[in-house]
Image (cartoon, rainbow, N blue to C red; front, side, top):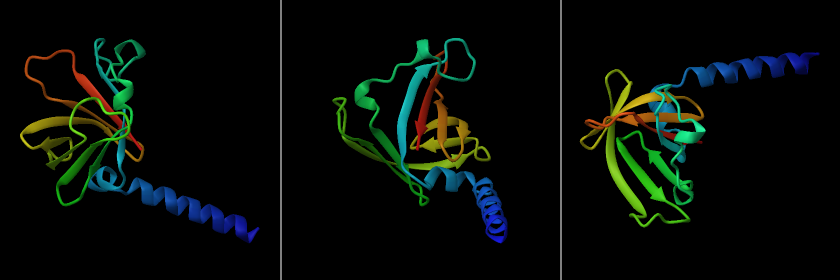
Length: 135
């Protein structure tokens, strides 16, 4: 009986630790892999199957944010004919609801343990482009 109680306490403590991560910790904790890209034609805040635009050569692309404001994009494996690596600077803005990357601004739609979903601010472009990274 006692081992089950200890396991339950440990599991609850772990859940509490996950819930207490800051946006910076969530973003910089692990490398993110590109999962989905598309224009939100029906404006429902997500990429539906008919809106998906990700290419096979993009599915292995990763991005790693570092807590000191640096980030590293890597086009691994299958190259899409662009640069294999790109380094840039970033910072949170607007009370952690956005990120400024160099001179571009993105709005965070979701940031949690598994998903980083954002939309870049593109002048005169509708519907919104949504980019989804996953661990």
